[in-house]
Each structure stands twice: as C-alpha cells, then as structure tokens.
Image 1 (cartoon, rainbow, N blue to C red):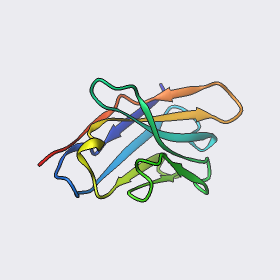
Image 2 (cartoon, rainbow, N blue to C red):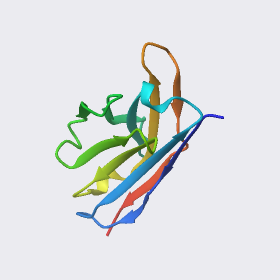
Image 3 (cartoon, one colour):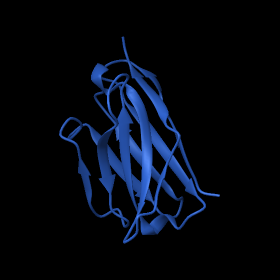
Image 4 (tube, rainbow, N blue to C red):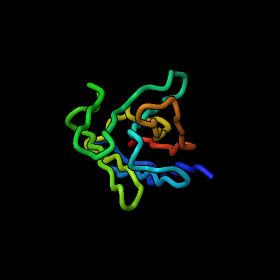
Length: 118
C-alpha cells in the first residue's frame, strides 16, 4: 500500500522555524522526484520546491527561496522541508508529492497544517 505521511506541522510565531517530514512507503522511493506543495485557504495549491532522486539538485519557488530547504534521505525513505524565518503568508496545508521518473505515476500525502501567527 502506497503511503506518503507528512508530519511536523503546527503553530509558530512569525520568524520561527519548523521542519516538516514526509515518510514514504509502498513504492521505490529512490526512483521518485519529491516535491512539496502548499495550499492556503481560498487559494490554489502551489508548488514550493522539489528535489531530484539522488538529492543532488533542488529548486524552490521565489516566495520561499533563501528561507526553505528541502532534503531527502533515501535510506529512511523520507523527504524534509526545513522552513526558517516563517511569515504569516506561509500559513497553509503543506503536501508532499512523489513523481515517478519516466512515468506518469504520482502520489500525494494527506497534508499537514502550518499556521504562522502571533
């Protein structure tokens, strides 16, 4: 059974930090590009960033560049999103997504809520 399980969300003050985790099971994790998305209330889901299958290349949306960092651990089958200097506008449900290399296969997690508020 394929699963992507996000964790680590919560309530944090502006300027604070959080680490999100996305644990994968049921598929060959190291063959999948991993991405993070987020969806704020009343807005469309937007791409946050992604990491290649070996972790060697990462890219980020302009809105989070310099504040967020993605990493992956293929042994632990987990991808991380480190979020620093959080802003109120980062408030959203954060989702991880797995995209198969050379295939149309993709999987989504159920999401974890991040709320940035004073």
